[in-house]
Image 1: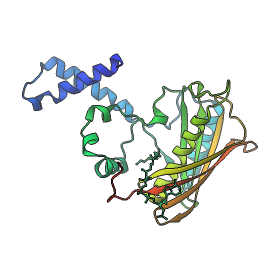
Image 2: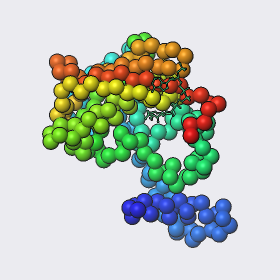
Image 3: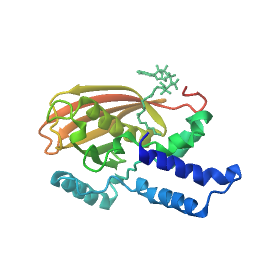
Image 4: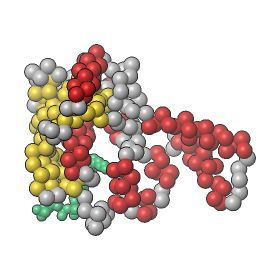
Length: 241
Ligand SMILES: CCCCCCCC(=O)SCCNC(=O)CCNC(=O)[C@H](O)C(C)(C)COP(=O)(O)OP(=O)(O)OC[C@H]1O[C@@H](n2cnc3c(N)ncnc32)[C@H](O)[C@@H]1OP(=O)(O)O
């Protein structure tokens, strides 16, 4: 276990201790509270520019923020740990009681795509167009996502495609999970370059949502990958496990 992790667990234990009857010393409680209040940083919107963003990513962000002004596009915020109502609902309805009660594990859980430090992994921002049922994601894949030297790992490309397609499906259908993802890798993506992932809802049949995506250079001249995916809307009456 990492030392930081151990500190968090200790702090969590201290804050929970009154339920066990014995109150830890006030100094220890204050330190524990401070540690957790400083973690509000986890909830900062990670889809806003930071110093690791290159000029292409900043440019695309600015262009699409402008498009949001007339309401046709919407900027989708993104957090290190998902904390939206949909996630709360997911936890309440679909997470087994055993898992839900494991607060230590849940408090450490991070969204995979937001688990790297700034600039090392996925730097991305998404925008959604409701009328077109379309989501675009601008992504700069950092050095920790390397596969072949100088290029992105195919799994990291699949991850950001899945993340963008999931957002598209969740907006259209509520609580869904990916059941199928097919990707054609056509050209390798240079590390630290910015790509645009364009996802749209092709059709909805009952609980099935069919989403298609392509990944291109921002000048749209290079098609790096295309993909189709199938999402299933979860049935609250069926257990996930
Ligand atoms: C809230 C935030 C969510 C964020 C999600 C982010 C994206 C992700 O990372 S998801 C993680 C990876 N995905 C998974 O782990 C999903 C694993 N799969 C499952 O748990 C189950 O398949 C689940 C719960 C999605 C659906 O199960 P269940 O409700 O029993 O549906 P089931 O009856 O089997 O299938 C429904 C329909 O879909 C079809 N279907 C299911 N899987 C597939 C597939 N792989 N290909 C084609 N069709 C399929 C079935 O044939 C069925 O069709 P029909 O109704 O015509 O007979």
